[in-house]
Length: 278
Ligand code: PAF
Image 1 (cartoon, protein in one colour):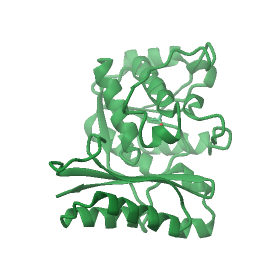
Image 2 (cartoon, rainbow, N blue to C red; image 1 turned 120 degrees about the horizontal axis):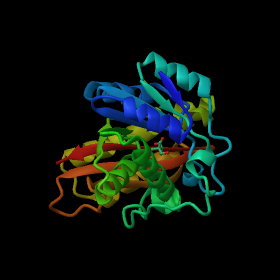
Image 3 (tube, rainbow, N blue to C red; image 1 turned 90 degrees about the horizontal axis):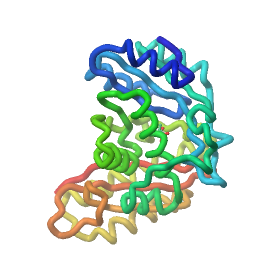
Image 4 (cartoon, rainbow, N blue to C red; image 1 turned 135 degrees about the vertical axis):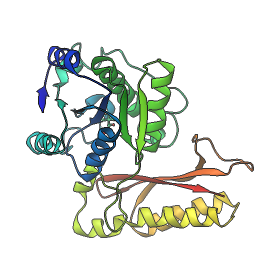
């Protein structure tokens, strides 16, 4: 596996890369969920490149940019063992040579103002900006993102389409711990007691999904039930909501839904979602 740190490294690597190129963008602190993204990339691509970059532009001023877990040596070893061909690990200066405040940014209005965007102002601007930069530098044919960040996936798809990047954006199913908790680098913030309670997020989503599947039309009650389940387990709830798959509020003709939730357990902000239909 070739380690790449500068744009020159990437340009040279890209010139020599062959076949369909798949990109797996990450912020490092890799776990089994990331390795499933790599597997999905290998299944469809001839050459796989991953990026490891904790992107300061997607963290708010009071968020966990400094504390975000980082372990480059472990990330590199896992990616090499998974057969990744290239690893792009740029510095902040490499990605934002004019500084964060002066950086050209990409905005996806509307879709970024709801759900996580309403609770993390500017977050998705940072995400789509860095992903657009990675797409432009690496020029992959496909790029792979986890469905745990379902709104992020929708926003990136919109950007890729609107800016005619030519990159096919793939969503990969949520990877879960045995008790159902979605794998996330931020799970490392949970203490033992919080870790026990964290799976309530998944179980509340499952119950909401079952209610929808069995024909309940009372969305407000389902959402209220979900919020209550989470706060009973000690979560500070950001949202628990039932949406159409395009993330608009559902109407009476909606048959395909996504149930999405986000909340804080201690200093960990956990998010998760499930598909549902009726
Ligand atoms: O999902 C993530 O890890 C990040 O938001 C991403 C897509 C790598 C952009 O920094």
